[in-house]
Image 1 (tube, rainbow, N blue to C red):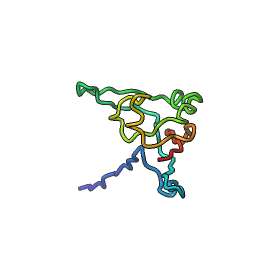
Image 2 (image 1 turned 120 degrees about the horizontal axis):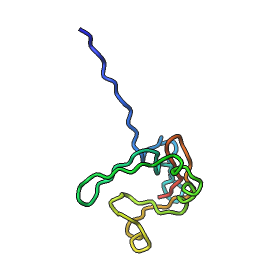
Image 3 (image 1 turned 60 degrees about the vertical axis):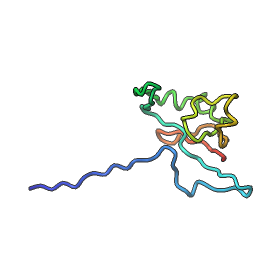
Image 4 (image 1 turned 90 degrees about the vertical axis):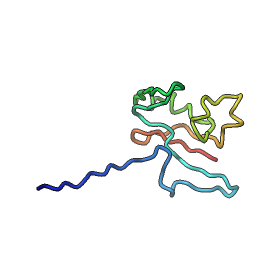
Length: 114
């Protein structure tokens, strides 16, 4: 009888990076370069509970205009906030994106401060 060893797949969280890249400023702010988006199929739950899938293609994710659009945007704690705009940003934001997006393989990272 053949016994096979299960293959374990490494799963990476989209909001994780090696801790050596994260630091606290002298003023007490957290600076990090997390993954802010990736290429692939994203699943979202609609208000009625159904699942919606959206394909993010490399030519869109890594377009110059797309990468430049990250700079200055608010960092929010959760997507449950919905659309963050001038009317609710004060309630929802916890930090700011300091840089343009930076391609890292199939991911986009950006420097943030919290």
